[in-house]
Every structure is written in structure tokens, then in C-alpha cells.
Image (tube, rainbow over all chains, first blue to last red; front, side):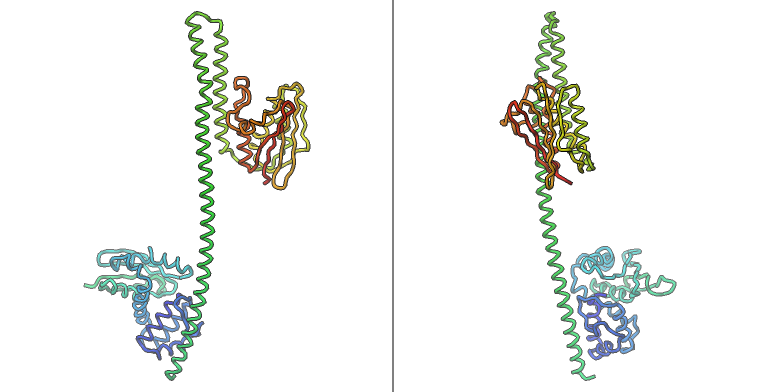
Length: 183
Length: 280
């Protein structure tokens, strides 16, 4: 997983819970390959961020999905800052979400060929409702929800995002995401 | 854990991350440099290809213009002749004089055959570019022997091939055309009673050198370039069936295979044509 996810996560923990909590989760997480030293331009095992999220959940008594969703919103802000050109191509939230698979992920793969990205398939798109299918071996649909909420805020749109796991094992690898404009 | 411990650990992690980022930057810079180098090399190759293709296009265009000019220029003579002879025939028939009719119709027939020969030669010349180049092992000794036996038919010819010609990888079709043209000329243009023909060969580092020698009347060195030009014959065109295309074809083929063609001649003694053929 790209280093920016790790650096932004630790920044968010610093800002939201304080540096002592950051220190605690690093110490409490299962073996971290770099001892918690991450650079945004590096690549690190996905399991390490999962470990730190679980440690954070324990340290703050907050459910893991809620933490991941909050992080998703924070991460969107960071990505939008470093790659503003992706946003300039869309005039609305739904148009932007369409671009993820058609354009954004393609460009990301050019810059980072080893990036393992989830896929977002647009199932339907109406004026006030959009349905997408999320596919990923990493089961991080909650992060996708947070990113979508961050994008909605950017486009000044109020939306409600709901998830429906499509797998029989409920393993989160294929999830239908419904985004609706709030009345 | 005290604050100073926390900041100490954070500092260490930041330092470690910074070093890793610097390493990655170094690596990416090197990759970028190598990619730029590869792009520059590719660019250079593409530029060369463009120059080469432009040159080939220009050659093809020049050749086309030359063929168009020659076609109109060289065909005019027999056509004009047909027109004149037809007028004479008309006049004689109108006057009731049939004494020259057979002679005139023979002349017309020869001019028409001449035009046909010229047109067929033009087609053969332009089609050279489309020859299927099937490079296989060719027994050149066998190939040349067959050509000589065919070309000398009914004629008194003393011929030899020395040393024995090799087996080599080449387009048989193209090699045969070159030898056929040279051997045909060596026999056809030799007016001597005791004609002789010698085929020679020498293996060079990266090519083969072949020679075709006759004991004919020789060629004036002033015509050394002219004889390789389309439709240039050194005798009157109505004295022979030659189209003047054989040597230009031979030259085109030899040069397309990376070789060269030239001759050495002594008046009344004979001529030797040489050509090289690149080894594959």
C-alpha cells in the first residue's frame, strides 16, 4: 500500500487524538517493518495499517469501521491537495465518482505501476442517486465511504452513503455502495 | 512515557523516513535519467528512419518521374514511325500501288512488337520492388549452367565457369535475373564467329564477386554510365529486339542486395561485367 496512506493516517491520529496516542499505537501494533517510519513515496505491507487501525480502535474505544470512515474523509483532503487536476475534470460528485475507474485509477497506475487499487463499477447513475460496485481483496469499503464523504464535501453536496455486502461470506470484498442526495 | 522520549522516537522515525525518501528519490532520478536516455536513443532511431524513408520515397518518386518520362519519350519513336508507315500505306493503296504493302505491314508489325517489348520491360522494371524475396540456399553453379545452355542455343559458344560457383543463401529469382541479363548480353552482342564466355567468382569477406566475360567488340568507356540507364542500347533499336532494360534491371537488383555492378572493356578484345552480392 502506498506510503501516503500511512503518513496521512498517522497525521490524522496526531491531530485528532494527540501524539501520545500515535506513539501508543505504533508501540502496540504487531511488528512494523520500518518501526513506524513511513514516507509518503514508499510502499509498505497493507497489514501494517490494519494493525495500527485495530490498535487505535483499542486505544480510543472507537469501532474500526468508524475510524476507517473518518480516515477516508481525511485522506480525500490530502489526495485532493496533491492531485488537484483529478478534481478539475468533474463538475459534480457523481461525475467525479464516474472518473475514478475511467480516468483516475488509470493515471495512478501510470505513476505507480505496483499500486493495488480497488475497482469501482458504476451500476446506475441518476440525478440524485448513484449505485456503484466496490471490488477489493482488502475489504476496505468503509475507507471508500469516507473518501466519498470527503468528495461530497468538496463539491458542496449533501449525500447519504450506504453499503450492502454482496458476498455470501460477508467478507467485504464485493460491496454495493449507494450514494443519495439528502433532501 | 515522557514527552522527551516521545519526541526522541518521533525524531528517529522522521529521520529514517527522510533517508528512505532520499533513497527513493535517488532511485527515481536514475530511472528518469535512463528513461530519458532511452527516449533520446529511440528518437534518434526514429529520426534516422524518417530520413531513410524520406530518401526512399524521393527515390521512388524520382524513379516514377523517370519512368513516366521514358515511357512517353521512348514510346513516341515507334508510334511516330507507325503513323508515318500507315500514311505511306494509305497513299500507296489510294494510288493502287500494292508493291510495298507487305514491306509496310512488316514494318508496322515490328514497331508494334517494339512497343510491346518496351511496355513489358517497364512492367518488369517496376515490378522488381514487389518480387518475393525468398532467401534460400542457391546452387549458383547449377543456376548459371542452365542459363548458359538456354541462352547459347543453336550458337557456337566456347564457355567455362572457373572456379566452381558456390552454394549461397540468396533470392534465386533475383540472382537468376542478373545472371540471365549479363549472359544474354555477352552472347547476343558478340558478333564474332568464335564466341567465348567465362564466368568467374571470388569469395570476399562479406560478399561474393562474380564476373561475366566475353570476347565481343567491347564497350566504349564513354558509355559506362549510359548503359545502365533505362532503354539505352548502344545499337539502333530496330536492329535488335533488345529493350535496353536488361542492365538497368541487373543494376537495380544488385544494388537492392547491397552490391555494386560495373564493367571493364577493351575494344575488339572483350568486356567483363563484375557484380558483388552481399553474403547473408
